[in-house]
Length: 109
Image (cartoon, rainbow, N blue to C red; front, side, top):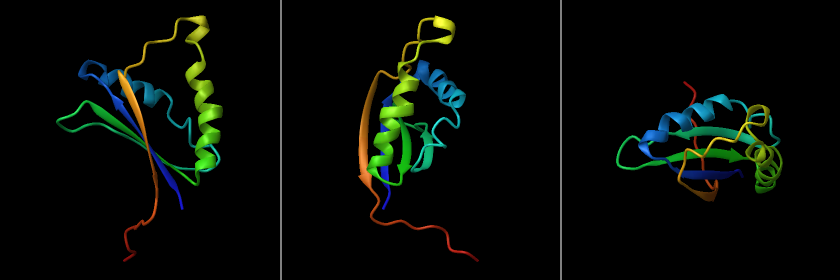
């Protein structure tokens, strides 16, 4: 079954808008990756500064291929036309990994 990767990003309140705009500007950057199944950026509703970046992959190999290929290239590039790369909006990051052992979808009417 699929694997789920959740990147837990610590984002100070004053950087939330910056983080969300950066993700919006990279919309569709992962969708064409082999083995990619799902993405969600989850904003904290209360009590935490942690955003969750949820992705689901066909298998660990698909995730690793994306991590070492397109994701690595995107994060190593410089800013536009040699401009200095902007500072990260997050002050910390932790990656959680899970295997899907059960799942359910809405039943058809």
